[in-house]
Length: 283
View 1 (cartoon, rainbow, N blue to C red):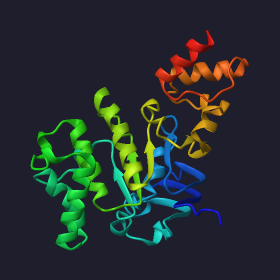
View 2: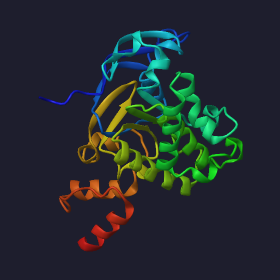
View 3: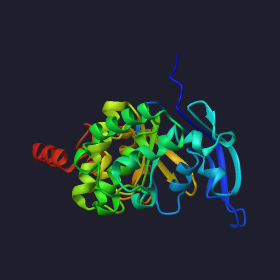
């Protein structure tokens, strides 16, 4: 029996209220499978953030507008389900983690979501300890989120989302407020979550390079629809990937050209170091 998708987006069109019914999403069809790590990329205005707002019910329950089609997440139709219930299935980490942090300490922040859901205290403590252990937050557990660096705030926001034990974790432009060192560490954090929890992970991002090595799939958006969704290897070999207006790493552009010219036929390297190593062998 074929594996069932954990996320099914079926012929979805959406226009925000007071936009003259101009759709931001236009006939989107895409399915995500359990345990995958997918990058959603596309030029500004292509509908990436709107697409992930569908997954935890922010659309249509918070952002008003006209919506057609259905989104099924872990067997649940998001149109018929509260955002509180969906938060236990889909965890969201937004561009600016400061907007998510409301408590006086990191430990209380991580416990905040489960407490609001009425989960028993003993289980809350177990969940808090588990994510602190997973993400290595012992040294800052008693610190105020206001005292933390951008990278630390993001780790706490991730921990708070994980404390709800979602099957899907969504990152919306996670590198936008991070320095290069924190960006590098974020890739490792996401890989740890994938390995340890087998979560389904979706990353909306214009900087592809930090996540290509851990992404199993890439979805490319343009003009409100998904024009390409496939395994990472297949997408980086597809000419359309280089024409949609995203920041494709230079190493991929080089190997795409070498492949086009018949000079190279192997797997495309997803990192600069690997690419340079292959180029030295070709010279």
